[in-house]
Image (cartoon, rainbow over all chains, first blue to last red; front, side):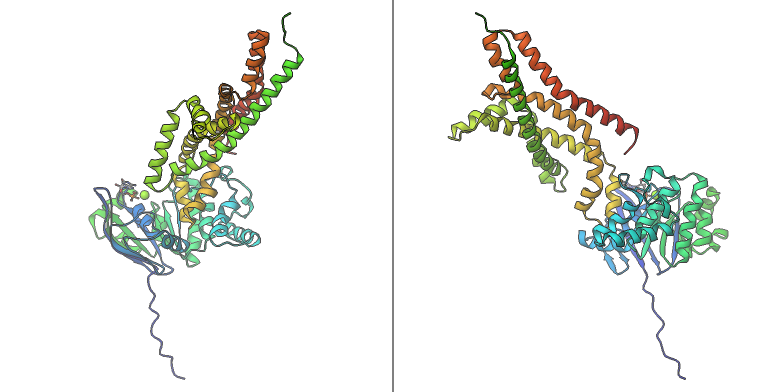
Length: 254
Length: 217
Ligand SMILES: Nc1ncnc2c1ncn2[C@@H]1O[C@H](COP(=O)(O)OP(=O)(O)O)[C@@H](O)[C@H]1O
Ligand SMILES: [Mg+2]
């Protein structure tokens, strides 16, 4: 039996940033940021406040325009120019969850989850209900479908926000300090949902202050400092940082 | 022999009050529709459209309603366009309301946190879908008390239509007073009728404000 001569599958990166530069007026926030994220990979971004972590995420899903460089996300090319239609196509493949949940307060949990699939993918009522049930079950909140966001705890609201993103069946999920606004006893339930998502193969980029989560769940961690990727590594990086800046950052986070 | 106030005069006041209501309703429906367009223009993406709408709002807000009414009634007459008093009054109230409601509603749309639009657009909704499904329902809730407050103002402003001879409540009272010369009685009754028309709106607005302050729903 002859072995099939298969070329090794070249996995294109799900997300690739090349020399991305972003300024707010005179303030340069991203000073040439480059990194790749492979399909199914979980990447954590850590760094001091103001180092450009949120801005990097916001550039990836087109919330901010960039001045130079390029971003490639699931086959969507993002240069310095892009149309609204291109942005919407990109955002169908990239979900983002924010620190402040940003649920729609006038809609029930189920309506929050189904709004985008109904409007953007034009799915019908029955399909939307099934989808909501499945996505809410994924975050352990199936029984809250008819509640309003204000009736939920912060941890539950954040899990609904995750379900709302998942309902669009994104290929990549971005998380921006999703547990930072939560009481410490509520962070666990959100982190567990994210961990399960990671195990199920979701490509994830998560900005986080949870060093334990980054070390345990992320395949790689990116340390950003002053608008630059300062150091990249696996879990071993936390025990043996190469740069004194990461060492002192990790020291301050303890 | 003196002519004294009697029930048939009261009936005439009621008739006037009915036309006050009709005029108010027309003005509110037309003004609300125009105000919605003004609000859209004031929050448009295009800077030019926003600027044009701003100029419109400033001109209208700076013009007395009575002047608008004279323009609509006498001004169009100059061009040989015969405008019935009701129509002139409705048009001038509509234009006046469009500027004020447009500005009130613009404020309400902008009071919805920016992050709501962002969250909607991150879910691949178009700008318009985000506006209709996410921004508008929340803005409407904020807008209800000031809008009802404006309706009360407008209902009272319809009395200006009396100067072009439209028989609404104030004009009816004037006509009666011309023969009875009982101003305190006649205008007292007319004032009470205005109160009866406005009070439910004011009370409604106040209760809305209370429920809105308690919870979001
Ligand atoms: N919309 C904005 N306008 C101006 N400056 C901004 C804006 N957003 C962020 N910045 C600035 O960019 C820098 C990086 O911000 P951010 O990406 O939020 O950092 P991080 O998420 O790492 O804390 C900060 O100095 C911040 O003040
Ligand atoms: Mg941030």
